[in-house]
Image 1 (spheres, rainbow, N blue to C red):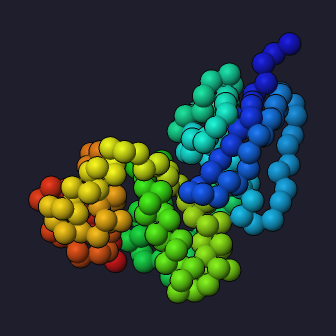
Image 2 (image 1 turned 30 degrees about the vertical axis):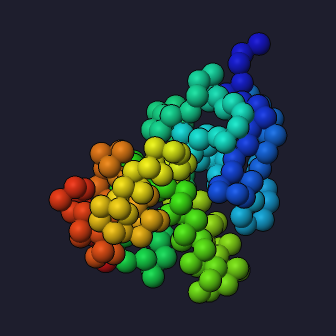
Length: 202
């Protein structure tokens, strides 16, 4: 009997302290069709991101064609739910996200900065808009990176050496770790422009 095309075993995804789904066992074989139903914010798009190799599981095992999923897998065809972008997103920000959608650049964000954006949205616009933000964010080609001890140490050093807010230190530390450009519109990051490549957005 041929191996399933898609397999998940006790799969769990957490974003910060929020568990989107857990203990998921799933097998999809040749010739089978699967519909994933549920209200906004329940993790449907997150499941696709896991299968596309854009988001790692918090726990469990996932295999696509018998192997762990990887970004840009030529065996997978994917049509996004929509290509339209929020018109409130600045044009350069749209262009940056489009590069991620097209697979030309990898986009990363520390879970600390993700949490700060969620909190700020909740504080200024209320929980309804904040939950909508989570759903919108889950559709973006941005990989969330856990904050481990090393990242926390580097963030603390950015704060100590450059007087950045600690949460901004995580963004700077992640860019340093990944040898990546830091995309931001916050001019406070100019102070680290000699240490990091800054991609200014508007």
